Structures are given as C-alpha cells and as structure tokens.
Amino acid sequence: MAEALDLARQAPGTGDVPVGAVVVGPDGSVLGRGRNRREADGDPTAHAEILALRQAAAAAGTWRLAGCTLVVTLEPCTMCAGAVVLARLDRVVLGAWDPKAGAAGSVRDVLRDARLNHRVAVVGGVRAAESAALLQDFFSTRRQP
Image (cartoon, rainbow, N blue to C red):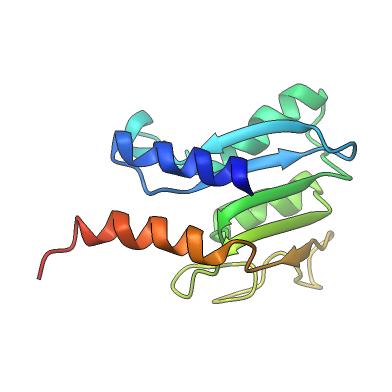
C-alpha cells in the first residue's frame, strides 16, 4: 500500500484524482503500477487500476493474472472492478471505501457477485485514513463554498 500511496500522491500534479494502484504477483513482486491519468491522457479509462492491470498483463505475458493481488488506495469503481474480475485476480486490497461509486462492497459488489464467472477476495480499510486524506485534500482545493 505504501507504493500505491506514493503513486496516488503524483496524480494531482496533472490534475488527476489521487488514486494509486499496484499489482503484486504470486511471488510478491510488483508486476504493474498505475495512478489516475484521465486528465493527463484525456482518456476516460485511464484509472490507476486499469493502467496497473495493463502493465501487469504485459509483464506476465498473459491477461490472466491468477494468483495476483491488486493493491489500490480507493475502492474500485464498476469499470475497474469488472476489469479485475476479467483478469482473474485473486484479491483486492483497498485503502478508502468509496460510498458514492465503489463496486467492491459499498454501492455494489462486482468483485464478489456470485452471478459472475470469477469472484475476488476483498480486504478493505488498509491505511484508509491516509488514502482518504489524500482525496479530501485534493477535493478541498476544488470545491469552494
């Protein structure tokens, strides 16, 4: 989570929401890294999780990331949760829960939906206060009374 938080801290430099993610392989090595880059790249899919998954798949030489863990500072949205399921990750470790758009148990639970062909274990609240503080600081400068 420390590396994901470091990545998240870089995102506001390009106007992006501070979210960072890493994909950890079965042996504990980091296969992929990402931070939000929607603003930087002009790409609506450039979420931290998607970028980390793409890099991990390239490093692994396969889109099937069985045995891997996604560590992310904010609960994944529906798009990112769907990508995690499709990539067949074993686990998601998240920092802050997202009560507005979270799809790992807050608003919906895509990761553990029994109707899908794969289910992902979820560990939430890891360094949640730090993750939430990054988001609160970012949005406090953009939302004026």
